[in-house]
Picture (cartoon, rainbow, N blue to C red):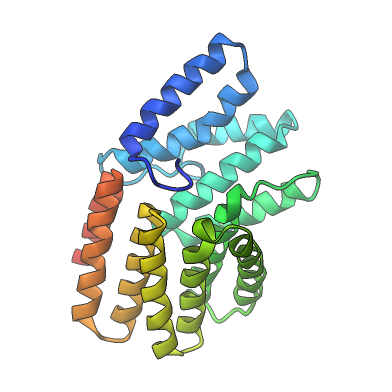
Length: 254
């Protein structure tokens, strides 16, 4: 449900609590521990208490848990933390932290037989993070990394369009934006937003609107930028991400 966004964060948090209690009751502590990264991200998106406390990289307690997982060779748990850390860091606009998590995850994945793709979600946020860095830097390595991730998302989109069609369209829009193909980028943003709405991925519809707003702002179209920022705020609020809404409002005000 976190991956699809089809359940509000508050309702999802309750589901996680019940599931966690069941795992303790049945002594399934491995699965109970794996819930920790998701629980932390959900809490960090839900509650408005000032600056976002990112999952790892800003939280000493989470860093301790991560260090212990790596020392104990629990790479799967560490990979989970890096995946959801990237999601949260990207949502809050800390792109350097997001790609740092991706790179650390890639190091661990070299020694793991199976990668955690979460039906395309992992590659989607990897690629968004790479493209965000490409906007800030002329280093071509971000474009090369983004192209690899887009290829993976394209694979998932062919397997299950309802999960990944809008993801692929948004990544294509961001890539068109990078190459200065404004007309094509606008078309792709519109298609991505419509597809996310049709497939009920409310949080990714919000992200698509936020990216479209940033695009129009770069092109000096403040009216269309304001429209998409408003849509993004409304959708994040509907999802229950109050802290993200407050963060977005503060960013726009600046």
